[in-house]
Image 1 (cartoon, rainbow, N blue to C red):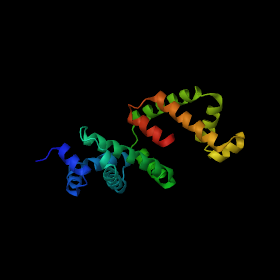
Image 2 (cartoon, helix red, strand yellow):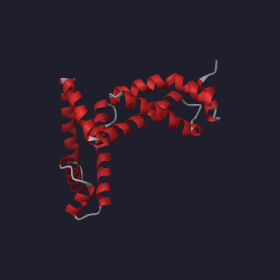
Image 3 (cartoon, one colour):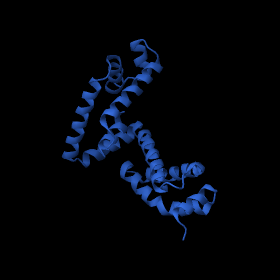
Length: 189
């Protein structure tokens, strides 16, 4: 029986059988991981397929001395978050999530999320005035980048840079330990 390291080395050499072995070993765990976040079987299946596609594309850069499982789940995490962001942009998907959230209402989670929103509002107050104004116009008033640029008589690139600064500022102040924080970032930042 081959070690995972040997299998990864074979994968790097382009052996399809090694790819199949790694797929069989982890695909069901990736599916469960994606399903727990996305709540959609089709999306979870797509995450698994996209993740393994990226693994095949990046096979030459995989370090067989490090944990393949960690690498795989890191790729899957990014694919999942990207998909979540894409899906949340779709109005119908947002409405579906809202419906599921209200049907599975949990008071403790609502309190934690409320505390998080309050914490974010305090962080936003610490932004430089112009960046605070741009953040407010984008995230609270839901203006597009071009509408903000026109209203403030600045370039769209300045709006984009300001919002990137603001998001990084908020993320750095929040930390990355809580799933609720990750969800907030995915939904609102």
